[in-house]
Length: 214
Image (cartoon, rainbow, N blue to C red):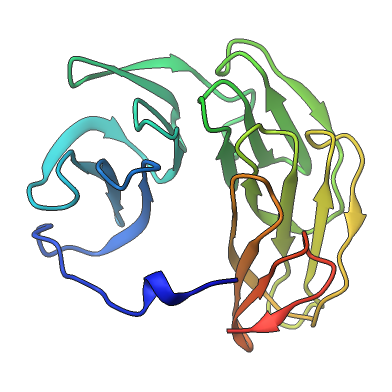
């Protein structure tokens, strides 16, 4: 993957805090960040990080839609209208480890209770399938059909698996054993990046067929 765009970093004006997760719109105009601890608070910037305000949303933030108008947090699915956020959908279980969102915000995939839950209507209704045991983090292509998940724990062999039918059928990916903390996907699902407890960041440009250490 081309990592040139990540070689220069600029600090935003976000208030000093213990940040637990971040998400951004496709144009980088809208940024979201959630604090750790209790209660968790989600902050938003609508000017690429120049200014930040706290929102009424709570919980760990998993993802946002391409235009930044829809956000998935551990508490559910929020929609913004005139800068007011409303809860428009909830998960079928309270125990959600990770969630991913399609570009338009309509398709959601979430890991919890040993299942992958998927919705095609922004969380109004859900279906479930059983992914490989141990998945804890999840990423999605922009159309919501290609999913990739990773997992593992200390002392246990890690794993990564992918689905091309929105979580119905999964195949294991061939990559080094690791405890995968996070994973990201390009819009078409071909470029992947994963960060592990051992060995740092790895990337793939062919949907996980081969990997390179970054």
